[in-house]
Structure formats: C-alpha cells, structure tokens
Amino acid sequence: MKEKEYKDWKESREKGKSRYLIQNGMLAYGMPMFVVMTFIVSKAPETGYDAKYIITNFLLWSAAGLLFGFIMWSLNEKSFIKESQKRENT
Image (cartoon, rainbow, N blue to C red; front, top):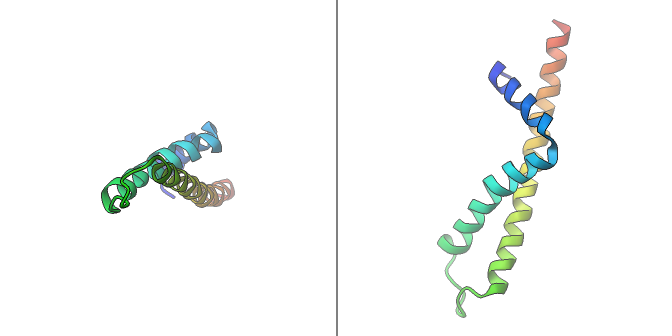
C-alpha cells in the first residue's frame, strides 16, 4: 500500500464505516447504476416507467451499492491492517 493510499484510508476509516457505505457505496456506485440501468440500458416496460418499476430498481441498486461499499470497506481495511502491522514491525 502506497503512502497516499495509507493516509487516505486512515482518513476514511476515521469518518466511519456507515458514512463510507453511504458515500462510496450507495451514492458513488448505487445511484449512478440505478440511473444507467433503469433509464438508459433497460427499455421501458410496456406500461412505461411506473412508480413500482422505479422504486424496485432504486431499492435494488441501493442494496447493491451498500454491498459494493461493504466489500470495498472490507478489502481496504484488510490491506490497511496488514500495512499497519508491517510498519510497526519495521
């Protein structure tokens, strides 16, 4: 892990896991995917974009964003801990 990555992650983890999941998972991943997959990639259902269709996709991509954020948090945390231990031993 490079020094900048180490410092950036240290700052991110100090802000907290919940904030990271919302900002980096839901907002940075889930919402763009919701817009792209709901309105650009998929064709409108025969009945058009009704509220049920939009809400379902919103909930789906919000959950996917949280999952993505959780996975990224876990991977970054694992790397950070490994790097912290490495720095303590040298």
